[in-house]
Image (cartoon, rainbow, N blue to C red):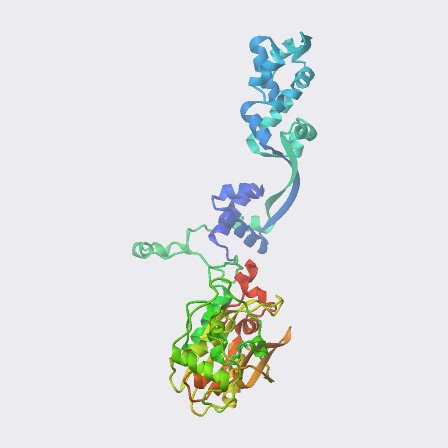
Length: 501
Ligand SMILES: N[C@@H](Cc1ccccc1)C(=O)O
């Protein structure tokens, strides 16, 4: 039978006493608690020892009890004064007793017969008795001493001195239940020790000294059980959703996409709406609800030439052959500030700045829209927006890219496309992916940017574009069915959420 050094040591020590409290066994072996527990369990599984748990009623020293052990019970403190002066008033005890202790003291002293009490001039006067002069250690004093020494004492043991009720009434001790562990050697264990166990020093690390001195020949190397269950360990790690977004960013960059970034979460309506050919004061502006900034209310418009092209496009279609929206465009309205409502605002900015053709761009943006919070809606969420620009791009390319996103990035098994409307794309499409618990979940929109938009921004080739609610796709990947969990403080989730990719 293979026994570790610690198991052997534990068994030998156990054999000396046959049956012992676990804590005493720990002391005897000189090992730490965990090591002894491990050894005992090991020995038990080999039938050499038995671990037994027994609960027993105990008395436990209270905080007040601890104080009494230190400065003496109130009756002893009172008696000390009485012994010194023979006769005192109740007031004279205020120096040695607290207000709480003062009240019952007369009764206590009288019960013990340590003092006689009478009234003189309306005052209570205590006088020491013969019994008080001679008083010595009582059972309750012994019980207090015992408790002070051991803190916890089996109830039976203290009750030999004083009923537990009495100790409780005096607030010296409380009753409780304690679990005691005993370890007992089995006949098989005894037999093994009788045959002789070789107790070789056991080492867990091979050091240069061991090798040089040749001592490695004599020592026993500790065997590790690599299948033993271990305590769960939670190292610091990235918030799971953050990790997901970071990986997504890496992935897109690896696919050749160029990242578009911006410092602020605040946008002018110009970039959020106008540059994307969304008419002002028109129902189409309301394809989504948005927030507005109270202060400051307005920001700046970009260069005049660009603003003029956007105005022309809105008012009469510019040079696209379109008739535009046919209204008078207001620069003041375009200057209004708002928390960015979609990542597409960055696509507009990028197109106006100039792009590589062919080229692929993306951005991961925090965006804001009023909504009712529920399992699939947040008012503040993240979008991955992007576009591909190139001479012969078609709608089919777009659907191909989108499907790849949903399947590869989110691990969605089924994806479906439906016709939709966005003021800035034609045709427009809406995408849904199938979530095992939630059913079909809409996760974004896409389309081919309209010429009224791209031409005004200075681009002459087709641009296919999309905006994906990445939080919803993250739900698929992280295996959650409530979007609010992405930002949850729930430690269990933070610790155990799968880190994906
Ligand atoms: N911006 C749209 C998505 C979209 C992006 C690009 C083209 C078409 C649609 C939204 O927030 O839902």
